[in-house]
Image (cartoon, rainbow, N blue to C red; front, side, top):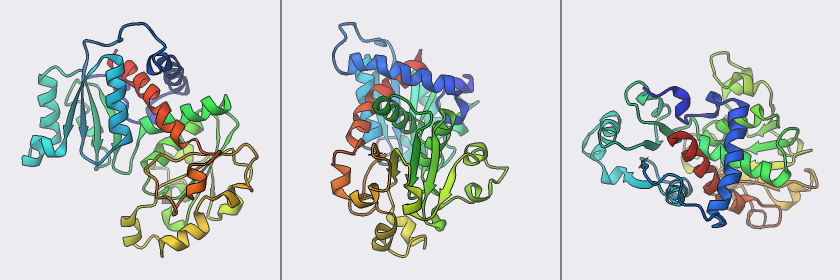
Length: 315
C-alpha cells in the first residue's frame, strides 16, 4: 500500500509546508502551461486514469489538459463507459486499472469517503477530485494559489465564504487550507446551511481545529466588513427541496453578492467562485464578470496547480 501521504485525499493530511510546496511547484509549472519552457514533457512514461462518476467540466478537463502538458497519457473513464454501470464495484474497477499498470487514479465520486475506501486495497496513488460533500483538495489548492498569486500572500488576509457551507466540499477543504496558511476565515450562511460541528465545535469532527479558528455569521452585511476575498458558493436546487431555503429569491436578497454589498468590504476586495455559478442567485453577473472578479483566473490557475499535483503524486 502506498503511504497515505503519497495520495491527495484532503488538505488535513498535508502540512502547511507541503501545501506551500505544491503552490511553489505550480508557479514553476506556469512556464510549461504558458509555453515558455523549451524542455521536453516531464512525465512521458506515466499513465493516469480519470474516474469521474459525477458530472464535471473544470476539474475533469483541467486534469486532462494538465496531464497532456506534462506528457502523461490520460485515460478518461466515465460511469457510462465503465463496467460499474454493469454492477462492478469501485474497488474492482480500481484493481483492474492497477493490473494494467496505470500510475495513478483521479477519482470524482458522489459518496463521501470513496477514495479512502480504496486505501489498503490498492497500491496505485489516488487524487481525490471531489467525494460527496466531504472534500475537494485540488479546488482548494487552486483557490489558495489564486489568492497568493493576486495578493502576494495568504497569511493575515480575511477570506469570507458565503452560502452552502453545510454541503460544500469546496468550503471544507478551503477552511482547512486557509487556516493552515494563516488566513482569517469567516463563513456566512443561513443557519440551516451551517454544519452543526461548526456551530458547536463537536470534538468528533476532524475539522474542529480549523472550525475553532473561524468566525460564523448569518448576516452578510456584518460578515463582509474587512474582507479581502469573498467566495460565494453555488446553491443547489436539491437543497431547496430539503427545506433548507424558502426560495432562491429570498436567498439572493439576503446573501447574494453584488456590487452594493461589496462596498462594505475592503477596497481591495476580490471575488472568487469555485464554479459552476448560478448567476443571479448567489452572485450577480456584473460581479462575476467585473473588475473585482478572479473567477476566470481560478480556472486558468487550476491548470498549473493540477500539473503540480500530478508531479507530486506520480513522481
